[in-house]
Image (cartoon, rainbow, N blue to C red; front, top):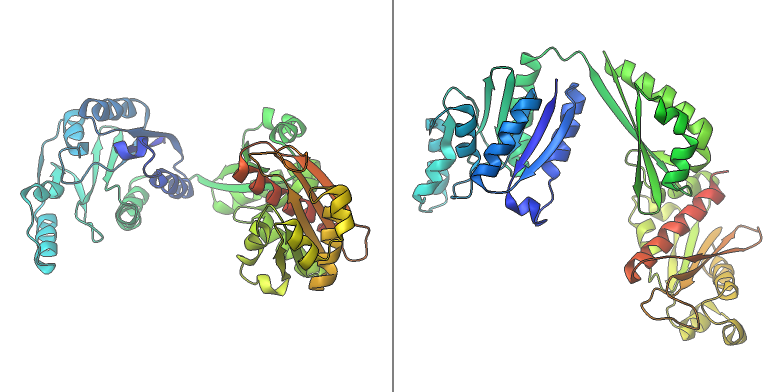
Length: 412
């Protein structure tokens, strides 16, 4: 069974709103064992919408359309559907009654074009929309099942759960279960990860492996099918074991786990408390830590010392050190970490100093960053980086790198 999702709306193409409907539908369909093979977005143009429907009918067994069911002239899903399906529309009395009741209850005058929202295709299985106005519709024509849903996410999700999914479960023998797990890696690039897993990727069948790069880290999506969920999960578990045997040193968690939550867990496991001293990152590192539930158990706090004067007065950085090496230096980052450990009475301290840009500072070009680490009674460490990108990118990349360094120190 090949499933396709088509989103109708020029606002999606303009980037005014994100197409979160397609993502959510794909996740739910995968859980049913009905994988989505294609996503399409088409603007509010009758010929283009009809053309998209026509192409989808040639390649897909289930077509889920969201959007274009509103009351205005540019809501063209019904018109295009009538052209392709050869089915006229008619007013659905229960939906019309709900629309009229809404306006009456809110003491509003209903414009005539709102009647359009109650229109459904002849012969459609109608899904009552209790969250909005336009009903959902399911039409089976030949070998193709068409599903038409409003574009408002709240309405779409309610109709999927209450009507579409039960319909599909009744209509199809869903013997194949699909399970996915996203593995997260940090400290290794996408190309290096793919090189080390090349043999697995080249011969993948079930499960499949898909590397996905993101800012400062790499994801690897494992997807397996089975006659039962447990069978698919077992295949995922075995492939995960093989993957981690090869690149486990860089693995920090799966699915919804973040590098911050992993660092929090490791700090808790060691019984450590964390503190930070930040200059050009302006508190971004510690903000991400304290945004986690339960952060107070491992996070003591942070000191944001942007200027040289604040580094001297708050962090007790000696004037001679700043005068000789500058604030953007190995020496300053080391002293920031050491003094943060003693000032905040913590087991682990991290420091950030650098040049975010756009201009150079102290003879250092934009993107120059020093990150200091002081863990318990170990010798302090300082790492120098040269990040690319604009001011905000440099700051974000430095923060992510700080979490990466802590992770690799704490995981052993």
